[in-house]
Each structure stands twice: as structure tokens, then as C-alpha cells.
Image 1 (cartoon, rainbow, N blue to C red):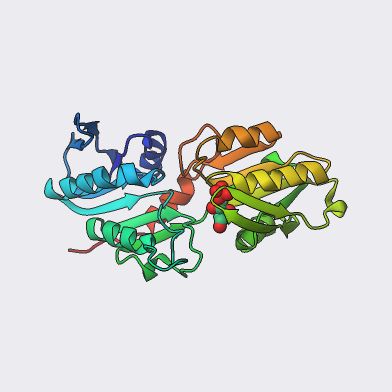
Image 2: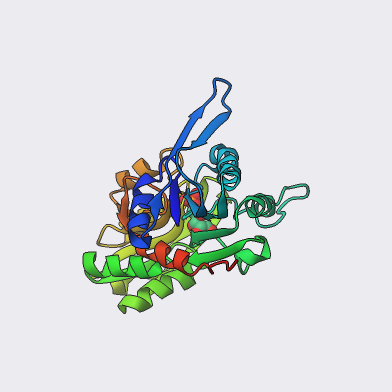
Length: 294
Ligand code: R5P
């Protein structure tokens, strides 16, 4: 297998190449003066090719990524896979208001038309049970929980795992169970994209534990911020905030740091807060993609 790193994904791609025994397929990209993308594959394309591209900022990446996938196939790849540790466009999974586009379906159709397989980490599956409901390509979902649990075990004394909303309960419970730590869930009310309220249940009995907030996506950071502020006010210790997908739109990262929280994320999206390595988790997912027999 050859791995091609989309710009910004070079570090993770290099680690994946080492873990998978894959070689590098170099890439050249630039923009034409009108903003259109130029893509050139600077190597041999025979056999299985995987493109490593986390899909944060998906609107600017999708068109050139599809152009690359088609070019790789035209140059001789027998199969083209996508390793997208963060998979975008999953949150609009139904019409909330009449006339709204269900963008998750459209995005799934587009990727499925250009790639043979997809490996991703903890996709935001809320109202879909599995990616197969909307993706027609072969997909493999990897989970960050084992890597997060291992990091907490080594770095945090007496952790209390905290999910900021009911959606995170099962996932946070999984991390907690792996290290034999207690876990609780907060109640979240979202009033808008950037307006979130969080209520903290009685946590008096956990005052000698270190609060560890864990969530899948940190986007505007408002969920983490609201939870971290409440914990700072109601708990003796400053919380640690762990996210799988470090989107950090706008001032999200600075806001969380300013609250006094320690912020640690997985390297599903490259970000200065990355402290939990998912190379082995993702490589294991790639190894499970069935080999196509001629
Ligand atoms: C929500 O369902 C997710 O699990 C996250 O809590 C959410 O995506 C975080 O978004 P934000 O950082 O914008 O509050």
C-alpha cells in the first residue's frame, strides 16, 4: 500500500506508513489565481493507494480531494481508500426545519462515488446507527477510547470522567470502565450554534478526584467551555478537557485555556493540543479493510 498525505496530514501519515509498512506517494498541490485547485501526483500509482486527509474545513478540501482520488485511479491505482480520522458532515442527519438539506447524505454519496473504502475515528453518529446507512463504500470505524483511557491512566491522578451531555454518556462510560474510574454525565441545553448551558449534578463526593471532561468533537468549544466553567466554580480542582476531534473554530482553544483548563486532544486533526496518539488505532482499522481478490 502507498499512502498519500493531504497537506496538513504529513505527521500522522508518516506514522501510519511506519505502522503499516506502507510507502509514500508524494503529492504536489497549489491554487490557480482564481482559487481553483491544482493537484499532481509525483510518484507511481500502481496497487492500493490510501489518501490521508482529516476532513476538518471540509468545504475547502473536498473538491481537490476528489480530484486527487480520480487522478490516482487514472494513474493506475487498483483501489483508492480514504483515511479521514475526522469525518465531516455528520451532524445534519435529518431535517430539523422544513427545506433543510440533509447534508450528511449528500456528502456520503459524493465520497462513496470516488473512494473504495474509508477508515475514520469516532464519527458523530447520532441518529444513524452506522455509516452503512448513508455510505455505500466499505468503511471501518476506529475508536479513540482505548488510547484516551491509556493516556488518562498514565497522566491523571484519581480521575472522575465527565461527559458534558447525554450523548457522551456511553462513550465516557467506556473510557471510565477501561481504567476503573467513576463517571458522571452533565445536562446540556443548546440554544444555538454558540450558546450552550450545562448543569452539573451533585459532585461533592468527588472533590478529591480530578475532573476529566471528555467529548468527541470540540468545535466552537462552547460545550467544553460551559462545562469547564461550571466545574471550575463547583469543584476544588481545575478540569482536564479531552477531545477526539480538535476543530477549535474561532477563539475556542484560547477561551478554554483562559478558563484554566488543561486541554488535550487526539491527533485525528493536527492541532497544538494533540497529546494522544491514534496511529495504532487507525492502523488497526486499515488492516481490517478486506483485501480485494482479483
Ligand atoms: C454534540 O453532540 C457533540 O458530542 C459535541 O458536544 C459538540 O459537537 C461540541 O460542539 P461545540 O464545541 O460547538 O459546543
